[in-house]
Image (cartoon, rainbow, N blue to C red):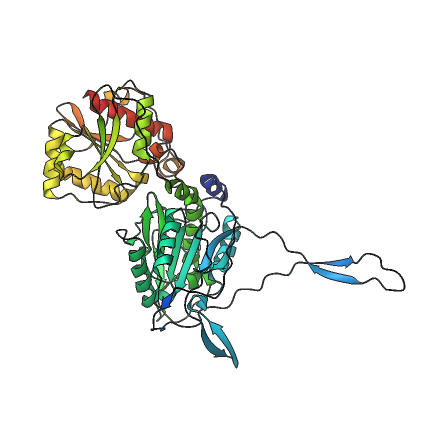
Length: 523
């Protein structure tokens, strides 16, 4: 994409953007101070001490021609000029104070600086730019680990940026883990593409979120399309040469939300609007477009992050009259549980809206576990592709041939999962292809009439007017053994807005899911 393009096919209109978000972010502020107790910093301070100019001075708003109240003669009335401060916009991103205090001499004057200050105006400049381009008005503040509240209601995102190595103490790590799990977001940038900072940040994230590695973000991740459509980025090297490649951003995901986003190549110099013969960085226009996408993504997923911070569990209210119906969700190497409360909501809906007199339960199981063969229905979902072993492929083939049912859906309609599932199910049944479920199939009317369904706005934006369920399946002996939706069902089951989902709306998703349960029980 051309870095200078804005709307039309390349970006959302402001109206569509605001309608999609449909939320506000709580205002708040966090005082920033230079003290940083509890942190230890690397000895190798190899990074530069200055990348960009300082922030612009805040405009001075003065209202002249105001006088004091009349004074007794012979005193002459005086005039004064008084500053008028407009209300401050809500604080959205806090730039974390990082690095020890160091002293340098500039133009004969001794001044102090810290690693995070090499691009002092980066996030301020970005938010001014997004305010002009998108019509949304937020501000950044300085924050530090010692005085930060770690409450995303006060500050939805924090920015880590610098050149040098750093370490955090265990208390800070625990507080940051809680902050992200409560709905906050960590944005990080290796200024100038500096490897010392990148290695340190990756190491800290491994300690803060064990078992959740930073992984390269996929081309269809909403961060690359939340406002500007960015399939590639142009990178400039220190020798002035340029290359066009896929975006290099990395993330750690929590449910359907990226709670940590990291760029190992420089963005903040681009936000600040300057260039220098050092490091590898995204060109200025596209760095700001990625920044605008991060801002819109943050706004669009803030409430979802708050929702996901509390896990909802459905407890059966009455004694079952027959055996349990277990809805077993398959674990796999990808993000296998992106909608943690979805299945529970679906089972409650099925219980309340059908005559099935069973006790519903969810179990999480791996295909290699012999117990997987005992469940009437297996469910698999995720954002990323995954691989089954030869033993798992054989186990699933035996299960489905013996009468079991597999339900699959691509969470958020992600193409990477779609590709992976189609490849893996073709290994299970090489001679049976996924085929569209015909309009007269009993699945579409066994309980609810789902011949017509509603989709999320993103589906209509990119796929046109669709009203029928885009379900596919594999039939064995006249029975649907595999049921697959390339559009999301789980977000709808969760019954909470997912701003960037390609899927069915809540009621349609719940009805389709209930029909699948009824079909699995009766067939």
